[in-house]
Image (cartoon, rainbow, N blue to C red; front, side):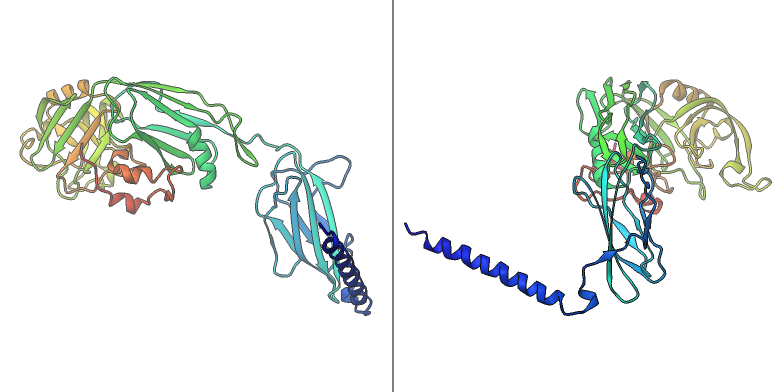
Length: 420
């Protein structure tokens, strides 16, 4: 087999290199100062990194490069660490300052190449190198699960409170993937990002009765971003009791209480009158208070108006943080079962309220139907989590493709409740 073609190729490449070299020499010898090699711009450029002596830059602070010479300006800055990751930045319009817009990594080596030009347009260059130290503050993402350990109703969502905001969707996915919820019996569920620092978890349906729920985080030591790592989190164990669901029909002025699918009590009630309609939808019992003093001023009723009130209330079961309860209302017994006369709460006789108070527990479900009121808020006023249909709930997960941001307050108000 002949080797002549390969020899010709080598000779051709050699001639091409010589030709290019000659061309480059000719171009650089035309006397044009703009074609000269870049000058050293060390005297024109300063930056906020360490000046030597073994010092290291603070990774929590942005990198800044400044043109010190009024007759020159910065034209380009490239900053990169030893692994090849670039640092994004912004250059001012007049070329006087460049600053990084993404965080520096801790314990990393950076090389910064700065291009400049003087008043005549001649190019200058300076290369900077520095190391970053450890963060000056410990940036550990800590998670606090809620509610506290104990026994709850089948409607109780799990909450995860973060000590630092997580906005980036890729970083949210890292966090969410490490938050584990296991139940026995097993049930399908998902996390929903309420905002940058809060997540809620609920099953597709209510939790099974008499279930055991284990919640834990695998974030410890996991890198979330260049400056944020997962910290240790205390696990959580919950159990559920009987499946208690109370359904109030505002149009028939009655409440039906179910226990494990069986009707155990029907109660005559009164709900919110026109202008003070009770919220529709699913709510979750937040707590129980034997005595509450209720004032009209707490819901915006001016003192001294015809709607003003200041009443001692007993056997009050709270379902919203804004003050909606199921409670004893002996003053309206004549209307209970016939008309709606309250300012938004569900009222019943003292005996019935005491029975309800003793029967339900935190996490049990209270649902209102056929009221002219708005739908219970999904978040922020208790637990309206169940008012999102499952397909919408799953879109609040960072692990679902195309997951949207949490709905606004106006959007939440338009959401329709699920059926129990």
